[in-house]
Image 1 (cartoon, helix red, strand yellow):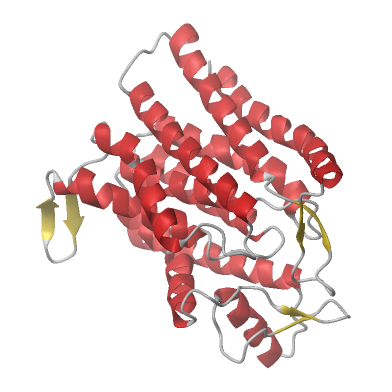
Image 2 (tube, rainbow, N blue to C red):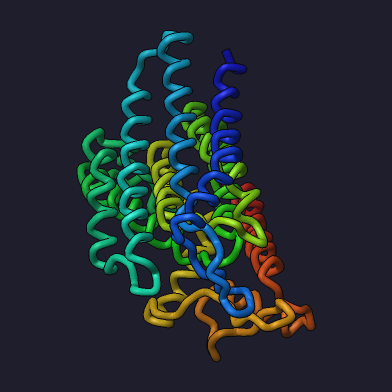
Length: 333
C-alpha cells in the first residue's frame, strides 16, 4: 500500500517534468513571455506562469492519495475534510496568482489591499473546519488558549502572512522553486515526526512537483513560476503549520522571509529584488542601499572579492535557508 501512495509522488513529478516543455512552447507561441531581469539587456524570452502546471500536478497527486485511502485502504475519516480544505486554499490562491500574473508586475499587478483581502478570503476553508489547535505554548508564558480567536484571526493572519511574504524573496532563476523544495521537505519531516503522516504526504507531493519544475526553472531559466506558484507555496507552508500544530517551527524556518520583509519595508515595498546585470554576467547592486537578501548576498560577495552571479546569489540564499533548518533541528528536536 505504501508503494501505491509513493506512486503519487512520481505521478506529480512526471506530470510536471513532461508537461512544462509543452507549456514553454505554447507561451512562446502566444508571446506570453517575461523579462529575465538579471541577464544583460533583460531579454524577454522566458515563458510565464509555469506554476499553473505545478499546481495541477500537485492537486492530481493529492487526489491520487485520497483515492488510495478511500478505495484501497478503506480509510474514510476526518482527514479527508482537512485535505479538501487545504487544496481549496491552494486553488483559490493559485487563481488569484494567475490574475496577478495577467495584470503584470510592471504595472504593479493587484493592489496590496486587494491581495490581502483575497488572501483572507482564501483562508475561509480552514476557518470553517476550525483547523488547528487553539492552545499554543509560549516561552515563559506556558500554554495559552486562544479559543475562537485562533480560527477567526490567527489562521487568516497566518495564511495572509505566509502567502504575501513568500513572494518577496524572488526574482532569481530557481530561487522560489528551490526554497519551496527545502522548506516543504523539512516541514514534511516535522509533520511525520509529529504523527501527521498524511500531512507529510501532502507536503512531499508538492515537493515532487517542484523538483520536476526546478529542471526548467533553474539557471538559465526557461520558465518562471509566477504568483500562481509562489502564493500557493506560501499558503501550503501556512496550512501545514496550522494543521500540523507546529506553527513555531514554521515561523522559525521562515526567518529569511521575515528578514526579507523587513528589508522590503525599508524600501516601502517599491524596490525590486533584482541585481544590476553586467555584460560579463556578473551582478552589481541595483540601489545604493540593501533592500533584500539578494542585494545583501551581492554586497557580501563583493566584500569577499567573489564575483557575484545570479546562480551564486541563489545558492547563497539556499545555504542560508539550510542553516536556518539545521538550527531549527537543534532548537526544536
